[in-house]
Image 1 (cartoon, rainbow, N blue to C red):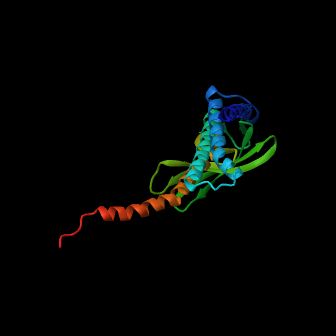
Image 2 (image 1 turned 90 degrees about the vertical axis):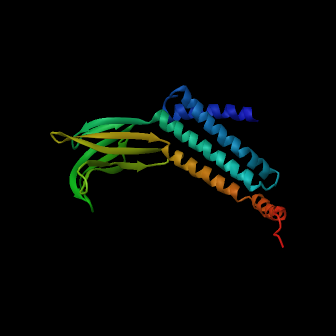
Image 3 (image 1 turned 120 degrees about the vertical axis):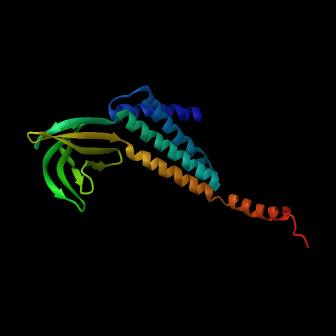
Length: 230
C-alpha cells in the first residue's frame, strides 16, 4: 500500500513540475513535491479505513492525521516557492512594461499621496497575462514624519496558486523608477499547511481520554498525600 502510494506521489510530483511549471526544477523539487504528496496520502489512509469499517476514529488519531495533512501541504508550498519563485529588478518609466513568469507588469503612472503620518509617492502598476488583465497594484515610497528614512510599501496580489509583488525603488531620473517584481507560486499553501497542522493539534487535545486520565489521576494523588497530624 505505502509503496504504491509512494510511486503515485512520485509520478504526480513529476506531472506537477512539468505540466504546472514547465520544467522539473532541481532534483529536490521532485523530492519535495513527492514527499508532500506522500505525507498527504498516508495521512488519509487511517481515517478512510475507519470510515469504510463504520468506525469512529479517536480524536487523538484524527488530530494526528490532520496535522500530518498540514505538514504535507506545507511541504508542497515551500517546494513551490523555493523552486519556482522569480525576482527581477527593473527600470521603468510610465507606459513601459516588464515581464516575469508569463505576467506583464505595466507602469501606469505615479502621484504624491498623503497618509495620516507620512507623505508618499504612489505608483500604479497594471498586471496582465496573455493580454488579459489580472489586477492593478499600488506601491508606495513613504517618508514618515517621525523619521526621515524612506520606506517602501509593496503592492501584493494574493492568489491560491501564486502571489505577485511590486515594490517601488529609487528615482532614476528622466521619469524612470526602479521596481522589484516578484512571482511566488504556492506561497498560500505554506500558511494553509501551518493552520491545518495547528488545527490537528487542537483536535488531538480535545480527545476525552486525556481528560479521563487527568480526572483519574487526581484522586490517586490525593490518596498518596500524607495526612495532617491531629
